[in-house]
Image (tube, rainbow, N blue to C red; front, side):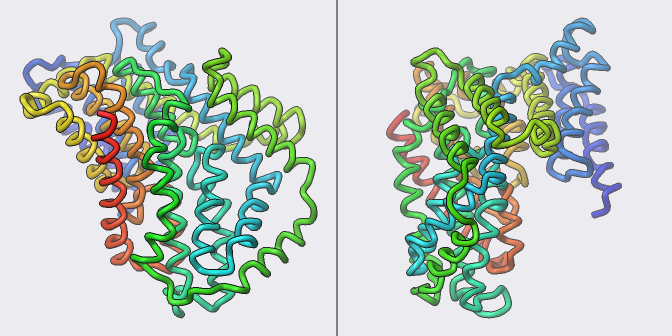
Length: 468
Protein backbone atom coordinates (compact mmCIF):
# COMPACT_ATOMS: atom_id res chain seq x y z
CA UNK A 1 0.00 0.00 0.00
CA UNK A 2 1.46 3.35 -1.04
CA UNK A 3 1.86 6.16 1.45
CA UNK A 4 -0.64 8.32 -0.44
CA UNK A 5 -3.28 5.60 -0.06
CA UNK A 6 -2.44 5.31 3.65
CA UNK A 7 -2.85 9.06 3.93
CA UNK A 8 -6.19 9.06 2.10
CA UNK A 9 -7.88 6.20 3.98
CA UNK A 10 -8.18 7.92 7.41
CA UNK A 11 -9.44 11.12 5.77
CA UNK A 12 -12.04 9.27 3.68
CA UNK A 13 -13.24 7.30 6.72
CA UNK A 14 -13.56 10.48 8.80
CA UNK A 15 -15.49 12.29 6.05
CA UNK A 16 -17.84 9.34 5.40
CA UNK A 17 -18.64 8.94 9.12
CA UNK A 18 -19.21 12.71 9.45
CA UNK A 19 -21.65 12.67 6.53
CA UNK A 20 -23.75 9.85 8.03
CA UNK A 21 -26.92 10.94 9.85
CA UNK A 22 -26.27 11.85 13.48
CA UNK A 23 -27.61 9.01 15.70
CA UNK A 24 -30.51 9.79 17.98
CA UNK A 25 -29.42 11.10 21.35
CA UNK A 26 -25.97 12.22 20.13
CA UNK A 27 -25.06 15.88 19.67
CA UNK A 28 -23.93 16.94 16.20
CA UNK A 29 -20.53 18.18 17.42
CA UNK A 30 -20.02 14.86 19.23
CA UNK A 31 -20.78 13.02 16.00
CA UNK A 32 -18.24 15.11 14.09
CA UNK A 33 -15.67 14.75 16.86
CA UNK A 34 -16.03 10.97 16.74
CA UNK A 35 -15.48 11.05 12.97
CA UNK A 36 -12.19 12.89 13.48
CA UNK A 37 -11.26 10.58 16.36
CA UNK A 38 -11.87 7.51 14.19
CA UNK A 39 -9.74 9.02 11.45
CA UNK A 40 -6.93 9.55 13.99
CA UNK A 41 -7.13 5.91 15.17
CA UNK A 42 -7.02 4.57 11.60
CA UNK A 43 -4.11 6.91 10.94
CA UNK A 44 -2.26 5.52 13.97
CA UNK A 45 -2.74 2.00 12.63
CA UNK A 46 -1.57 2.83 9.08
CA UNK A 47 1.03 5.49 10.05
CA UNK A 48 1.28 7.48 6.79
CA UNK A 49 2.94 10.23 8.84
CA UNK A 50 4.58 10.13 12.32
CA UNK A 51 2.07 9.16 15.07
CA UNK A 52 2.72 12.33 17.08
CA UNK A 53 1.81 14.45 14.05
CA UNK A 54 -1.40 12.46 13.54
CA UNK A 55 -2.50 13.22 17.10
CA UNK A 56 -1.50 16.86 16.78
CA UNK A 57 -3.47 17.24 13.54
CA UNK A 58 -6.55 15.72 15.17
CA UNK A 59 -6.37 18.04 18.19
CA UNK A 60 -5.68 21.11 16.04
CA UNK A 61 -8.59 20.35 13.71
CA UNK A 62 -11.11 19.80 16.51
CA UNK A 63 -9.99 22.92 18.40
CA UNK A 64 -9.94 25.10 15.27
CA UNK A 65 -13.47 24.15 14.24
CA UNK A 66 -14.86 24.34 17.76
CA UNK A 67 -15.89 20.69 18.09
CA UNK A 68 -14.91 20.74 21.77
CA UNK A 69 -15.86 23.56 24.11
CA UNK A 70 -18.28 26.43 23.79
CA UNK A 71 -15.65 29.15 23.29
CA UNK A 72 -12.26 29.59 21.65
CA UNK A 73 -10.61 29.74 25.08
CA UNK A 74 -12.25 26.51 26.18
CA UNK A 75 -11.18 24.81 22.94
CA UNK A 76 -7.61 26.00 23.50
CA UNK A 77 -7.58 24.72 27.08
CA UNK A 78 -8.81 21.34 25.90
CA UNK A 79 -6.22 21.15 23.11
CA UNK A 80 -3.36 21.80 25.54
CA UNK A 81 -4.73 19.71 28.41
CA UNK A 82 -2.62 16.67 27.58
CA UNK A 83 0.61 18.66 27.82
CA UNK A 84 -0.10 19.52 31.45
CA UNK A 85 -0.91 15.93 32.33
CA UNK A 86 1.45 14.59 35.03
CA UNK A 87 1.55 11.10 33.57
CA UNK A 88 2.80 12.40 30.24
CA UNK A 89 5.74 14.06 32.02
CA UNK A 90 6.38 10.81 33.90
CA UNK A 91 6.62 8.99 30.57
CA UNK A 92 9.08 11.58 29.27
CA UNK A 93 11.28 11.31 32.36
CA UNK A 94 11.19 7.51 32.27
CA UNK A 95 12.44 7.56 28.67
CA UNK A 96 15.46 9.45 29.97
CA UNK A 97 16.07 6.65 32.49
CA UNK A 98 16.13 4.20 29.59
CA UNK A 99 18.72 6.36 27.87
CA UNK A 100 20.76 6.36 31.08
CA UNK A 101 20.82 2.56 31.17
CA UNK A 102 21.96 2.50 27.55
CA UNK A 103 24.60 5.26 27.73
CA UNK A 104 26.07 4.09 31.01
CA UNK A 105 26.30 0.50 29.77
CA UNK A 106 24.50 -0.83 32.85
CA UNK A 107 21.73 -2.49 30.85
CA UNK A 108 24.26 -4.37 28.70
CA UNK A 109 26.30 -5.38 31.76
CA UNK A 110 23.24 -6.79 33.56
CA UNK A 111 22.28 -8.86 30.51
CA UNK A 112 25.79 -10.26 30.06
CA UNK A 113 26.15 -11.10 33.75
CA UNK A 114 22.94 -13.12 33.61
CA UNK A 115 24.08 -15.01 30.52
CA UNK A 116 27.41 -15.72 32.24
CA UNK A 117 25.69 -17.08 35.37
CA UNK A 118 22.72 -18.91 33.83
CA UNK A 119 23.76 -19.72 30.28
CA UNK A 120 25.20 -23.24 30.57
CA UNK A 121 21.91 -24.75 29.37
CA UNK A 122 19.45 -23.50 26.79
CA UNK A 123 16.76 -23.31 29.46
CA UNK A 124 19.18 -21.26 31.56
CA UNK A 125 19.71 -18.94 28.58
CA UNK A 126 15.96 -18.51 28.39
CA UNK A 127 15.87 -17.49 32.04
CA UNK A 128 18.85 -15.16 31.53
CA UNK A 129 17.03 -13.33 28.73
CA UNK A 130 13.82 -13.17 30.78
CA UNK A 131 15.54 -11.95 33.95
CA UNK A 132 17.44 -9.27 32.03
CA UNK A 133 14.11 -7.94 30.79
CA UNK A 134 12.57 -8.26 34.25
CA UNK A 135 15.37 -6.30 35.95
CA UNK A 136 15.25 -3.46 33.42
CA UNK A 137 11.47 -3.30 33.01
CA UNK A 138 10.53 -1.05 35.99
CA UNK A 139 12.86 1.65 34.64
CA UNK A 140 12.28 1.43 30.88
CA UNK A 141 8.76 2.39 29.73
CA UNK A 142 9.55 1.47 26.16
CA UNK A 143 9.51 -2.29 25.77
CA UNK A 144 10.96 -1.66 22.31
CA UNK A 145 14.01 0.07 23.82
CA UNK A 146 14.25 -2.60 26.49
CA UNK A 147 13.70 -5.80 24.52
CA UNK A 148 14.66 -4.77 21.00
CA UNK A 149 17.22 -2.09 21.82
CA UNK A 150 19.05 -3.51 24.84
CA UNK A 151 18.47 -7.28 24.98
CA UNK A 152 18.15 -8.17 21.28
CA UNK A 153 21.72 -7.16 20.27
CA UNK A 154 23.10 -9.43 23.01
CA UNK A 155 20.68 -12.36 22.80
CA UNK A 156 20.76 -12.63 19.02
CA UNK A 157 24.50 -13.38 19.14
CA UNK A 158 23.98 -16.51 21.24
CA UNK A 159 22.35 -18.84 18.66
CA UNK A 160 24.87 -17.71 16.05
CA UNK A 161 27.67 -19.21 18.17
CA UNK A 162 26.04 -22.61 17.66
CA UNK A 163 25.42 -21.99 13.95
CA UNK A 164 21.70 -21.70 14.64
CA UNK A 165 20.64 -19.25 11.95
CA UNK A 166 17.27 -18.32 10.39
CA UNK A 167 18.13 -20.44 7.35
CA UNK A 168 20.13 -23.12 9.17
CA UNK A 169 18.69 -25.05 12.13
CA UNK A 170 16.66 -22.16 13.61
CA UNK A 171 15.01 -24.55 16.08
CA UNK A 172 18.39 -25.51 17.51
CA UNK A 173 18.46 -22.47 19.85
CA UNK A 174 17.47 -19.32 17.96
CA UNK A 175 13.71 -19.89 17.80
CA UNK A 176 13.50 -20.67 21.50
CA UNK A 177 15.51 -17.60 22.56
CA UNK A 178 13.42 -15.36 20.29
CA UNK A 179 10.13 -16.59 21.66
CA UNK A 180 11.20 -16.41 25.30
CA UNK A 181 12.40 -12.85 24.75
CA UNK A 182 9.11 -11.57 23.31
CA UNK A 183 6.93 -13.56 25.72
CA UNK A 184 8.91 -12.37 28.75
CA UNK A 185 8.74 -8.71 27.74
CA UNK A 186 4.97 -9.00 27.28
CA UNK A 187 4.60 -10.25 30.87
CA UNK A 188 6.97 -7.67 32.38
CA UNK A 189 5.14 -4.96 30.42
CA UNK A 190 2.06 -5.83 32.45
CA UNK A 191 3.90 -6.48 35.71
CA UNK A 192 5.06 -2.90 36.28
CA UNK A 193 3.27 0.38 35.65
CA UNK A 194 6.46 1.93 34.27
CA UNK A 195 7.38 -1.02 32.02
CA UNK A 196 5.18 0.06 29.10
CA UNK A 197 4.39 3.62 28.05
CA UNK A 198 0.71 2.89 27.22
CA UNK A 199 0.27 1.68 30.81
CA UNK A 200 0.90 5.23 31.98
CA UNK A 201 -1.42 6.63 29.35
CA UNK A 202 -4.06 4.11 30.45
CA UNK A 203 -3.96 5.05 34.15
CA UNK A 204 -4.38 8.69 33.15
CA UNK A 205 -7.51 7.78 31.17
CA UNK A 206 -8.82 5.69 34.08
CA UNK A 207 -8.53 8.66 36.42
CA UNK A 208 -10.12 11.03 33.91
CA UNK A 209 -13.02 8.73 33.04
CA UNK A 210 -14.01 7.02 36.30
CA UNK A 211 -12.06 8.97 38.92
CA UNK A 212 -9.92 6.02 40.02
CA UNK A 213 -6.23 6.76 40.67
CA UNK A 214 -3.85 3.82 40.17
CA UNK A 215 -0.45 4.28 41.83
CA UNK A 216 2.74 2.34 41.04
CA UNK A 217 2.42 0.21 44.17
CA UNK A 218 -1.28 -0.49 43.65
CA UNK A 219 -0.55 -1.68 40.11
CA UNK A 220 2.22 -4.06 41.19
CA UNK A 221 0.58 -5.46 44.32
CA UNK A 222 -2.64 -6.19 42.44
CA UNK A 223 -1.14 -7.77 39.33
CA UNK A 224 1.88 -9.49 40.91
CA UNK A 225 -0.37 -12.34 42.07
CA UNK A 226 -0.41 -13.69 38.51
CA UNK A 227 2.38 -11.78 36.76
CA UNK A 228 5.26 -13.02 38.91
CA UNK A 229 4.35 -16.75 38.56
CA UNK A 230 3.63 -16.20 34.85
CA UNK A 231 6.98 -14.50 34.35
CA UNK A 232 8.84 -17.32 36.11
CA UNK A 233 6.94 -19.91 34.06
CA UNK A 234 7.49 -18.36 30.60
CA UNK A 235 10.96 -19.81 29.80
CA UNK A 236 9.87 -23.26 30.99
CA UNK A 237 6.53 -23.09 29.13
CA UNK A 238 8.38 -22.17 25.95
CA UNK A 239 10.85 -25.01 26.63
CA UNK A 240 7.92 -27.47 26.76
CA UNK A 241 5.68 -26.01 24.04
CA UNK A 242 8.39 -24.89 21.61
CA UNK A 243 11.49 -26.82 22.72
CA UNK A 244 14.99 -26.07 21.44
CA UNK A 245 16.79 -28.93 19.71
CA UNK A 246 20.02 -28.21 21.61
CA UNK A 247 19.67 -28.43 25.38
CA UNK A 248 23.16 -27.31 26.47
CA UNK A 249 25.13 -24.16 25.66
CA UNK A 250 28.59 -24.28 27.29
CA UNK A 251 30.01 -21.61 24.97
CA UNK A 252 27.52 -18.93 26.01
CA UNK A 253 28.95 -18.17 29.50
CA UNK A 254 32.46 -17.96 28.03
CA UNK A 255 31.29 -15.53 25.36
CA UNK A 256 29.50 -13.39 27.95
CA UNK A 257 32.62 -13.39 30.13
CA UNK A 258 34.71 -12.22 27.18
CA UNK A 259 32.23 -9.43 26.43
CA UNK A 260 32.30 -8.35 30.07
CA UNK A 261 36.10 -8.35 29.94
CA UNK A 262 35.91 -5.95 26.98
CA UNK A 263 33.62 -3.67 28.99
CA UNK A 264 36.11 -3.51 31.86
CA UNK A 265 35.27 -2.89 35.50
CA UNK A 266 32.00 -1.24 36.43
CA UNK A 267 32.15 2.50 35.76
CA UNK A 268 31.18 5.44 37.93
CA UNK A 269 28.27 6.20 35.58
CA UNK A 270 26.94 2.65 35.90
CA UNK A 271 27.05 2.87 39.71
CA UNK A 272 25.27 6.25 39.63
CA UNK A 273 22.65 4.90 37.21
CA UNK A 274 22.05 1.93 39.49
CA UNK A 275 21.66 4.17 42.56
CA UNK A 276 19.34 6.63 40.81
CA UNK A 277 17.28 3.80 39.33
CA UNK A 278 16.77 2.30 42.78
CA UNK A 279 15.92 5.75 44.17
CA UNK A 280 13.25 6.25 41.50
CA UNK A 281 11.79 2.81 42.20
CA UNK A 282 11.65 3.45 45.97
CA UNK A 283 9.94 6.81 45.43
CA UNK A 284 7.41 5.28 43.02
CA UNK A 285 6.56 2.54 45.52
CA UNK A 286 6.57 4.56 48.74
CA UNK A 287 6.13 8.11 47.45
CA UNK A 288 2.49 8.30 48.42
CA UNK A 289 3.31 7.58 52.07
CA UNK A 290 5.94 10.34 52.21
CA UNK A 291 4.05 12.86 50.10
CA UNK A 292 6.07 12.64 46.88
CA UNK A 293 4.12 12.33 43.63
CA UNK A 294 5.41 9.76 41.13
CA UNK A 295 5.84 12.33 38.36
CA UNK A 296 7.70 14.71 40.67
CA UNK A 297 9.97 11.85 41.74
CA UNK A 298 10.73 10.99 38.10
CA UNK A 299 11.57 14.60 37.22
CA UNK A 300 13.77 14.93 40.34
CA UNK A 301 15.71 11.79 39.42
CA UNK A 302 16.00 13.02 35.83
CA UNK A 303 17.63 16.20 37.17
CA UNK A 304 20.07 14.08 39.18
CA UNK A 305 20.97 12.05 36.07
CA UNK A 306 21.87 15.27 34.26
CA UNK A 307 23.61 16.96 37.21
CA UNK A 308 25.81 13.90 37.79
CA UNK A 309 26.51 13.60 34.05
CA UNK A 310 25.01 10.13 33.59
CA UNK A 311 23.24 11.77 30.65
CA UNK A 312 23.71 15.30 29.35
CA UNK A 313 21.22 18.12 28.98
CA UNK A 314 21.87 17.84 25.25
CA UNK A 315 20.63 14.24 25.48
CA UNK A 316 17.41 15.47 27.06
CA UNK A 317 16.57 18.21 24.56
CA UNK A 318 17.65 16.23 21.49
CA UNK A 319 16.04 12.88 22.37
CA UNK A 320 13.68 12.66 19.42
CA UNK A 321 12.07 9.45 20.65
CA UNK A 322 11.12 10.91 24.04
CA UNK A 323 9.89 14.21 22.60
CA UNK A 324 7.93 12.36 19.93
CA UNK A 325 6.22 10.19 22.57
CA UNK A 326 5.57 13.25 24.74
CA UNK A 327 3.67 15.05 21.94
CA UNK A 328 2.03 11.83 20.75
CA UNK A 329 0.63 10.81 24.12
CA UNK A 330 -0.28 14.39 25.13
CA UNK A 331 -2.44 14.78 22.04
CA UNK A 332 -3.99 11.33 22.47
CA UNK A 333 -4.90 12.11 26.08
CA UNK A 334 -6.66 15.24 24.82
CA UNK A 335 -8.47 13.32 22.05
CA UNK A 336 -9.59 10.58 24.45
CA UNK A 337 -10.70 13.22 26.96
CA UNK A 338 -12.62 14.95 24.19
CA UNK A 339 -14.81 11.87 23.69
CA UNK A 340 -16.03 12.29 27.25
CA UNK A 341 -16.23 16.07 27.08
CA UNK A 342 -18.52 16.09 24.02
CA UNK A 343 -20.75 13.36 25.48
CA UNK A 344 -19.90 10.62 22.99
CA UNK A 345 -18.72 8.14 25.60
CA UNK A 346 -21.87 8.53 27.68
CA UNK A 347 -23.99 7.87 24.60
CA UNK A 348 -21.94 4.90 23.29
CA UNK A 349 -21.45 3.20 26.64
CA UNK A 350 -25.17 3.54 27.38
CA UNK A 351 -26.00 1.90 24.05
CA UNK A 352 -23.63 -1.05 24.57
CA UNK A 353 -24.55 -1.40 28.24
CA UNK A 354 -28.14 -2.14 27.26
CA UNK A 355 -26.94 -5.40 25.71
CA UNK A 356 -25.33 -6.59 28.96
CA UNK A 357 -28.01 -5.54 31.43
CA UNK A 358 -29.13 -8.39 33.67
CA UNK A 359 -25.88 -10.34 33.74
CA UNK A 360 -24.00 -11.01 36.97
CA UNK A 361 -21.59 -8.09 37.67
CA UNK A 362 -18.55 -10.39 37.98
CA UNK A 363 -19.43 -12.01 34.67
CA UNK A 364 -19.79 -8.58 33.07
CA UNK A 365 -16.33 -7.64 34.32
CA UNK A 366 -14.80 -10.83 32.93
CA UNK A 367 -16.58 -10.40 29.57
CA UNK A 368 -15.24 -6.86 29.27
CA UNK A 369 -11.67 -8.00 30.01
CA UNK A 370 -11.84 -10.87 27.49
CA UNK A 371 -13.28 -8.66 24.73
CA UNK A 372 -10.77 -5.90 25.45
CA UNK A 373 -7.92 -8.44 25.11
CA UNK A 374 -9.23 -10.11 21.95
CA UNK A 375 -9.92 -6.81 20.18
CA UNK A 376 -6.16 -6.32 20.04
CA UNK A 377 -6.09 -8.62 17.03
CA UNK A 378 -7.40 -5.56 15.16
CA UNK A 379 -4.59 -3.26 16.32
CA UNK A 380 -0.92 -2.89 15.48
CA UNK A 381 -0.38 -0.48 18.35
CA UNK A 382 -1.10 -0.85 22.05
CA UNK A 383 -1.37 2.93 22.26
CA UNK A 384 -4.04 3.07 19.56
CA UNK A 385 -5.88 0.26 21.33
CA UNK A 386 -5.83 2.18 24.62
CA UNK A 387 -7.09 5.43 23.13
CA UNK A 388 -9.75 3.79 20.97
CA UNK A 389 -11.25 1.29 23.41
CA UNK A 390 -10.29 1.92 27.03
CA UNK A 391 -12.54 4.97 27.61
CA UNK A 392 -15.47 3.07 26.08
CA UNK A 393 -14.92 -0.03 28.23
CA UNK A 394 -14.53 2.15 31.32
CA UNK A 395 -17.80 3.88 30.48
CA UNK A 396 -19.59 0.53 30.20
CA UNK A 397 -18.05 -0.52 33.54
CA UNK A 398 -19.29 2.66 35.20
CA UNK A 399 -22.81 2.05 33.86
CA UNK A 400 -23.15 -1.59 34.85
CA UNK A 401 -20.85 -2.35 37.77
CA UNK A 402 -21.15 -1.38 41.43
CA UNK A 403 -18.70 1.28 42.59
CA UNK A 404 -16.54 -1.16 44.56
CA UNK A 405 -15.87 -3.15 41.35
CA UNK A 406 -14.67 -0.21 39.26
CA UNK A 407 -11.06 -0.20 40.45
CA UNK A 408 -10.44 -3.96 40.13
CA UNK A 409 -12.09 -4.00 36.70
CA UNK A 410 -9.97 -1.06 35.59
CA UNK A 411 -6.89 -2.88 36.91
CA UNK A 412 -7.71 -5.95 34.84
CA UNK A 413 -8.26 -3.87 31.71
CA UNK A 414 -5.03 -1.90 31.98
CA UNK A 415 -3.14 -4.95 33.24
CA UNK A 416 -3.90 -6.74 29.98
CA UNK A 417 -2.04 -4.21 27.83
CA UNK A 418 1.38 -5.84 28.03
CA UNK A 419 0.07 -9.40 27.82
CA UNK A 420 -1.90 -8.78 24.63
CA UNK A 421 1.36 -7.97 22.83
CA UNK A 422 2.03 -11.71 22.45
CA UNK A 423 -0.79 -12.53 20.05
CA UNK A 424 0.52 -11.33 16.66
CA UNK A 425 3.84 -10.43 14.99
CA UNK A 426 2.79 -6.78 15.05
CA UNK A 427 0.98 -6.54 18.40
CA UNK A 428 3.63 -4.62 20.35
CA UNK A 429 6.79 -2.60 19.66
CA UNK A 430 9.52 -5.28 19.88
CA UNK A 431 7.46 -7.94 18.06
CA UNK A 432 8.55 -6.88 14.54
CA UNK A 433 12.20 -6.88 15.68
CA UNK A 434 12.16 -10.43 17.02
CA UNK A 435 9.94 -11.63 14.16
CA UNK A 436 12.21 -9.87 11.68
CA UNK A 437 15.20 -11.82 13.04
CA UNK A 438 13.77 -14.69 10.98
CA UNK A 439 13.89 -17.52 13.51
CA UNK A 440 10.11 -17.92 13.76
CA UNK A 441 7.86 -18.17 10.70
CA UNK A 442 4.70 -16.10 10.53
CA UNK A 443 2.48 -19.20 10.73
CA UNK A 444 4.32 -20.47 13.79
CA UNK A 445 4.20 -17.01 15.43
CA UNK A 446 0.43 -16.86 15.05
CA UNK A 447 0.12 -20.38 16.46
CA UNK A 448 2.36 -19.68 19.44
CA UNK A 449 0.67 -16.30 19.90
CA UNK A 450 -2.68 -18.05 20.10
CA UNK A 451 -1.41 -20.59 22.65
CA UNK A 452 0.43 -18.13 24.89
CA UNK A 453 -2.31 -15.51 24.41
CA UNK A 454 -4.83 -18.05 25.71
CA UNK A 455 -2.58 -18.85 28.70
CA UNK A 456 -2.05 -15.17 29.50
CA UNK A 457 -5.75 -14.39 29.15
CA UNK A 458 -6.67 -17.39 31.33
CA UNK A 459 -4.32 -16.09 34.05
CA UNK A 460 -5.93 -12.66 33.80
CA UNK A 461 -9.44 -14.14 34.04
CA UNK A 462 -8.34 -16.17 37.08
CA UNK A 463 -7.15 -12.94 38.72
CA UNK A 464 -10.49 -11.42 37.80
CA UNK A 465 -12.38 -14.05 39.77
CA UNK A 466 -10.05 -13.41 42.73
CA UNK A 467 -10.32 -9.61 42.91
CA UNK A 468 -13.76 -8.84 41.46
